[in-house]
Image 1 (tube, rainbow, N blue to C red):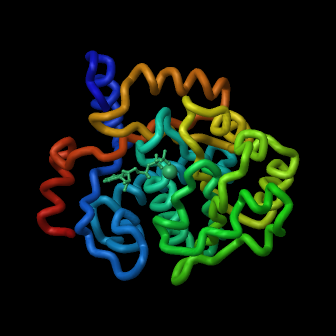
Image 2: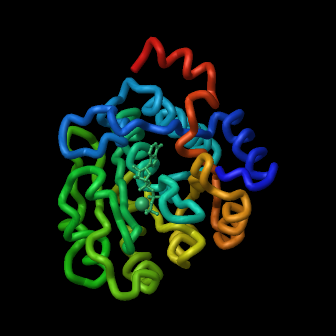
Length: 257
Ligand SMILES: Nc1ncnc2c1ncn2[C@@H]1O[C@H](COP(=O)(O)OP(=O)(O)OP(=O)(O)O)[C@@H](O)[C@H]1O
Ligand SMILES: [Mg+2]
């Protein structure tokens, strides 16, 4: 988070203390195939970074004991703060933790969806084609190889992404997938530039707000929370934290890669 004032610093420190942070992941982690190296839940499941995604997942599991949390949306105030990397790793952590559950990852960022690219899979047809009536749901759902996770990519960019996401067809689609999956993780667009995240946020059971370490400004995060206007925000996740922020992990990482 960009510490323009002590507010940002305070917020960042509070999240670190609470354990709601995901470390910075090196590009050199080593990938077995076309999957992006930052998908550590798959490429480096024994790493400290993958452990943090598991830990985030188990926090959600604890919340699930108190309330239903089937559809979880992931957003951030601004572009490029780590929504996609967080969503993909979280969904994979879920698939590994509970192989008996049906896990679905949806890329609902119709403007610049990156899930297909990050996972190294075909992008079309995707949600966009479904919403424009060009295909059926069953043509969209792809099982991601070697995992129990199913994926729906974003597809092409429609002319009016907000309108497409606000449509009755989108509501029907979410209703349908709710009936067929146990846990659904939705990669949303950033909150401040567009109405998309706010519209979809209200159709989720909970939202995670990704905050980028040394980058996000406390002011924009606060504005994003306001923009979400009553959508069920579960909390913030600090993304890209330095290991030095958590000395206990750093010490541990010398034994475990
Ligand atoms: N924990 C991390 N460690 C290192 N790099 C990261 C981390 N999280 C994200 N990145 C990198 O930062 C960039 C932005 O991440 P990502 O695509 O997940 O953000 P986003 O919020 O989905 O962006 P957009 O708003 O464009 O959809 C990518 O290059 C990604 O690989
Ligand atoms: Mg993204």
